[in-house]
Length: 237
Image (tube, rainbow, N blue to C red):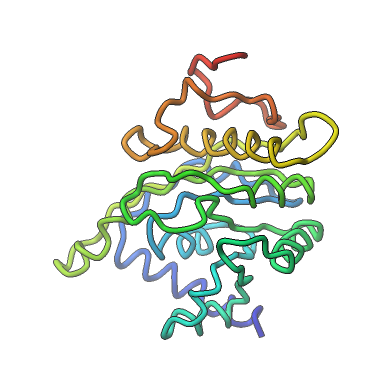
């Protein structure tokens, strides 16, 4: 059921994007054509994951907080799409295992590592789920910065198209420091990943990760070559 719904809804979303937005997309070639990939997006409002699903050349699986499944219409749509529900605020082993299995099958998984919408387009502190899932599935992570969606509702009420820019950065993978994936390691891995995401956003949207000079890359590798922090003096490197 999910497969046929996705085939129908994707061209509809693309038409609505053309109608309501002025989209600029850079770096789409950074999504590998095969193998397990996590698309790590900043999360401002409901449009971010919708845009990523529509624009990605590969089928995308997504994760969403359980509360969204109870929303009128939107809840029904994400059920039909087959979005993975997750309990926010606690370790949801079932959701984590489903996400890891998607990647182990060579799929593409969409994650908003902030865990919740900012509403204003500035990065919040990242949570540990991204680092854990990626390391367990040996998946590449592509950071995706999306700006402009915060003005969507205002522009819509004034019958104006909203300019939106999406930048996909260089993929990276995690290297577990030491011998075990403990809480300290996950915290460091998560911070380094969030700085990679911040690097593909304009300075005014980097929020908690504004100071890129504080970034390290001790737990990251870049198979395609070139960090997203290229040109920034990294402390300790």
